[in-house]
Amino acid sequence: MRPNMSSLVIGCLFHLLAILLPCQSAHDPTKSFVSLPFNPSYYHIQSPYNLPEKKRYSFVNGVHKCWVYSTDKPHSRTSRTKPRTEIAIMGYRYNSGIWEFEAYGYVPKGTSGVSIMQVFGSKPPRATSLMLMVYGGSLRYYSKGPVVLADVYDKWFKLNVIDDFDSGKIRVYINNVLKLEVVGRGGKHHAFKCGVYAQRKASRRMESRWRNIKISRKRA
Image (cartoon, rainbow, N blue to C red):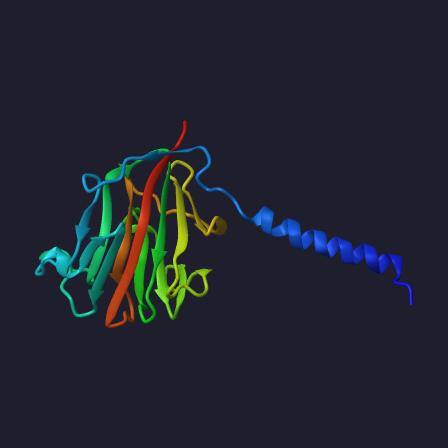
């Protein structure tokens, strides 16, 4: 039996779409951005105040490893926040322009109830404009927001977060694909952080790893 011409055309169109759509969804989020220096003079480690830093953070072979326990102390004696070990990139606090955080992240299985990346800064009473949290193996916007990566455990993923301070828009890319666009929460200054920061229903042990961290600013 000879195939129907319309069936052949439809089949070819579906095949063409299958080729083109993945290409359209991928995007280089670093285009038009200028990479800035990144070294310890631009960041510091926030970890339980009563422990040596090396007990909760390491940097070996280009990989930043951050871990914390739900029973740990906060990062300062005066803080009432939950335990954390975070790379706080305060050397690049900004109040204008379009800024980008880029890194490869890794979350071991079992880590849950934790923020692994944030855009710090917001209008009171909130403290952040964006938090990416791990709950039940998914990476999501805060604890109940949209999922940006459904299966986050035990694999490296590329994360780009672009904060347009002036327009108030924040975009999140996973492996060069736009996964989230939200309106920020204002504030006088913003800065990027990554690591582990315990949240509601935190697992006993929380860990994330980071490599190839880059901070960039869009050309004027």
